[in-house]
Length: 312
Image 1: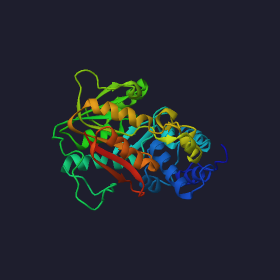
Image 2: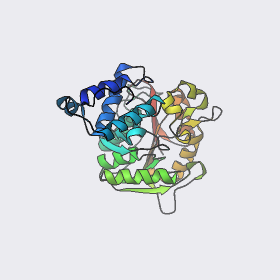
Image 3: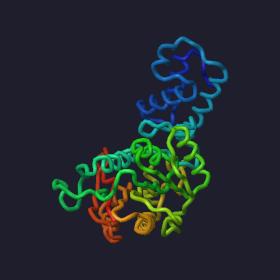
Image 4: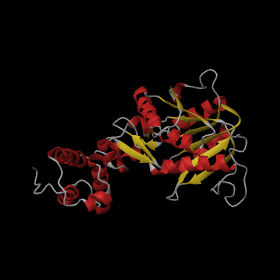
């Protein structure tokens, strides 16, 4: 079948990896092959090596052939295996649901650090990154309420609920099918989250009876003109609604979230946002315009401006 000469694990692994012609980097081919063998065949790297001489069934081989073809069409490996990892959580994903990013892990860890320690970790700010500053979350009490806007797979809400058990976590999204995936992921990760439907572009306040101490979001922020610079796995396969914004209005979602947060946050509540690295100054200015104080800008692990936070 398609050049396969042996059904032994070691040989199939080399065939599979070598046939990933659409992936230029050997390091990435190795990572993708490892993921496929783990997720589809139940063979993590150590077991794959230990069982190298064992044989894979015809059904397993057919699955590998299909996966290889899809990968060579540019499909993300997470959509092929149906699973993604965010921090230490395994999450189900499928086409139409944004795949969680490592950069977003940094947003979650910042929120956890601030709420857990009640002080702002060192971050660059437009004032002076070396001076002690008041925390955006300085007015938030333990046991407060957190809202994740545009939850997607539920990765942010799930990670926060697991790390901040004293807080009540809610999450919303514009897509009903996406909310179903997020709800399933929360159940699989043994956390309790209140999910509800919300189109943030047309919602100026929280549903009746709801208010929050913390709002966090990773909204769409990639400009349409930046689409050409993305990998085909992202630009051609992941949901455009979760990624792209018009070039002439790149802060579309941030304005809507700030307006919503002004009405939905309790006094002293705080807002945490992931942002486009090129729009740090604009996002700081927007938060200030909407009345947020102690506004800060933080860099991600690449050293790029990636998160902003402020207290209302």
